[in-house]
Length: 336
Ligand code: UT7
Image 1 (cartoon, helix red, strand yellow):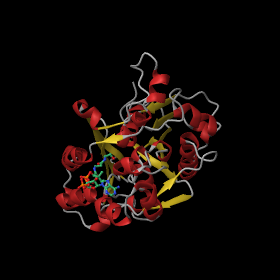
Image 2 (tube, rainbow, N blue to C red):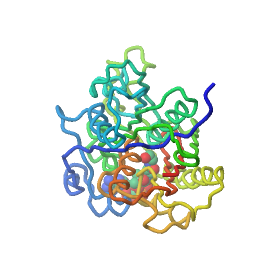
Image 3 (cartoon, protein in one colour):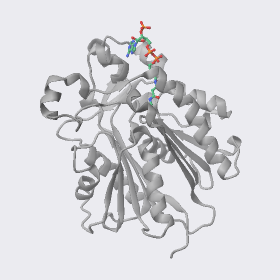
Image 4 (cartoon, rainbow, N blue to C red):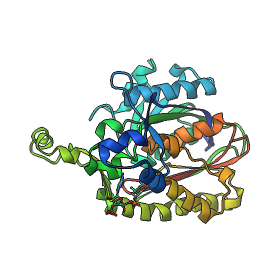
């Protein structure tokens, strides 16, 4: 039996589609306004995928290539893929196997899809971390990738949700740490199924005699529904809670955190959490202004940008945190 060990993030990368959609472009479509979107969410623009160019799997692969390069790892050395998405390429099979094919990985490594929406990446990271801690694998690729723009109601009826979500992908490579106290210190996962329908895409549901006929007649149910105010209310409680849980477990205070990477749900939620924790602006990463909410992709995109910009240094205490549909919420504390 191998001894437990830490994993660390050896490489990180991201990819976003090239099409930039500014708030102004949504105004005539959805009877919304740039002012409303910025005031309520902080979002200025987001990316929408290009049909025929971008897929959930190949966007994930683009992000993964950068993470692999940074880690100095060949694609065929990946021993496991954990792929988080709520917008998979197919109903089945999952996007993990498609990413494996896209990257030309021919070693028959396992590919696991994780379906935990906005918390998906942190859940996936935790899953990967367990495989490394136990010694089962040495190199695990963790990916979050989403295409929302093809599934949004872009009419005025859908504006409460459609202005928020965007497309993108991020990835990390996990390897075992050789240094005591470096790497992923702990991960914390939670869910509360009582609120499953508060943020949901209902169809296609398997619980229909004939799901194909149903979706043709009930197109509206293919769009995401969100009880925004209730989700907001829970998010501002769960984010600080799950961050505190991670800090407490490792004997740290909020003032020890060098960088908080929250899931980019709403700039107002992030600002609330920042204030509650007493963190200065330079210790909280926000890019929702440029990408909107990319659910499972938001944390790795933000992490990748923060690393690229030199805002995370070796030895820094980095906290990842997420909350979303399910409800699910999660955190990870990392000594970089
Ligand atoms: O990532 C997973 C977790 N997700 C979240 O954490 C999201 C949490 N929720 C939120 O971020 C916010 O609830 C929203 C940004 C979704 C909505 O903001 P809000 O301040 O809660 O607005 P609201 O839904 O209460 O709507 C306020 C008003 C309504 O008009 P009336 O009834 O006051 O006349 C809406 O019809 O704003 C209207 N509205 C809009 N107006 C212009 C809703 N969406 C829009 C829009 N443009 N896009």
